[in-house]
Image 1 (tube, rainbow, N blue to C red):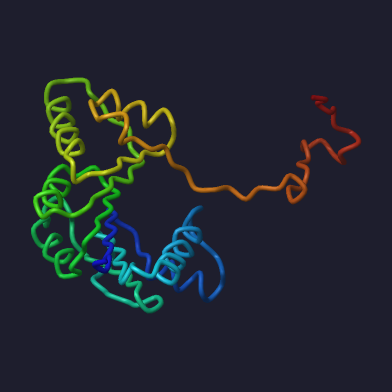
Image 2: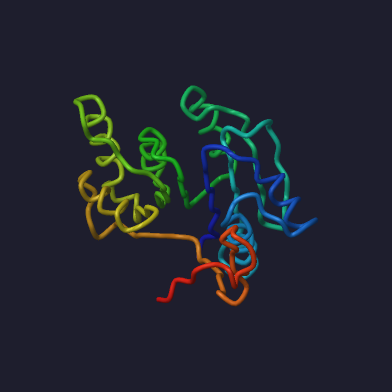
Length: 207
């Protein structure tokens, strides 16, 4: 079997800083960052045919390339994916990907990946405005690219957002809802005070 090389592209952020913070302090800036990084490390360590993962942030504060663990690199492009798209494509192509995950609804990027025969997935967290001719035409061009055979899955954040993908014209069998897992235990949540004194002085809601 041919080795898999996965390129994941998001719009912005600085996952170099995120990874350093997680390794140094265990703290994340936003929910899901720890889960994402742990998942990428597990993938590259536990899937034998997965040779390499490149996690690329386009609009990072500066350009960088840093290995997190063998087989996983975090890359900051330091570019705008709208105005510098050809330069971003060159950066992605330099990673020699066989599989491609795009976290931004950029029509030209999906077209670029499909034209190169990359097995592609859209991993989105977007809603789509179809009011007005220009937005409608723009989103229909996106749907046309997402319906190509090279794009195997199109995920969106939540069921309602996935219904929006279907309204856009994307084939239902491609659509997957997603969310980050939440590790929440009511026993770990301290009761709030209503601000009128000790809890005994507050009226209670009985459910």
